[in-house]
Image: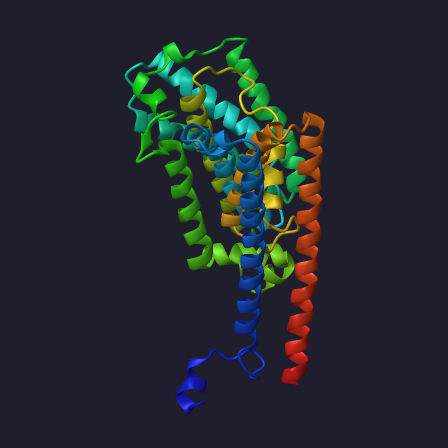
Length: 352
């Protein structure tokens, strides 16, 4: 190894060699292992179901699977950003419902509203809801579980009060807007393209920007992150605003896909969102995971919901299978964390 090679490699804080880089490479490999495991489980499930019923992979059924997983995947991306910071957002279902009904009401009261404006208004409404969550959590330092459980009911209550038993039908909304929920480009639903754009954007931000990487530092050890100069409160606030904005976008897409809206839109979906994130390999205690894994988890859960009835599994065992998958994901996450800690300790002892 030449002197130039040594100089080009970043030194560890103790001057003993590139330990942090080795740890980062190890963590990256473990993330890849998790995501490949999810992908393998998805492929096996599809293969088994296809062997039972070959119509499971028909063009229409694939389209339906993509449409069904789109909204859950967008919510999972926002939830992953929050959980990485060692928090949780239980209000996403209520924010989705509020945004969906607001979008329908906007078209009813202002029939000529351009579709991009409606999307921006829905996203902005979700961001405001996220800012309420983030402000209470970051400024008042109230536990996220308590705050978002409260806003779950608060936002849903606002939705019920606004709707007052009213239902908005597809006939009340522009046909061009409703086509967003059905139209395809080269066979891929437009809604799925929205999810891909969100996924790529969020993944790029978390991986390549300092503000994104700092979210992992906060989730790993909030006190250490604060002592190192990271604006923990501001970053947590940003995470909740992002989650709220994506829930608002999901609400707009929900309105486009289903057309018929009332105050129950998105009711209970928050539990599926958290399940998708955990199954996708995002550690529930924060600090590790990726939005790509969370999106894969959403696709896997959606596929389970479609595949198990084809395999003749009763609804009870469908829920049991999801629960077992969550427990397996938590166990795998713990095993990988222990393995990573041992590898890092082994590398340190060899360096000494």
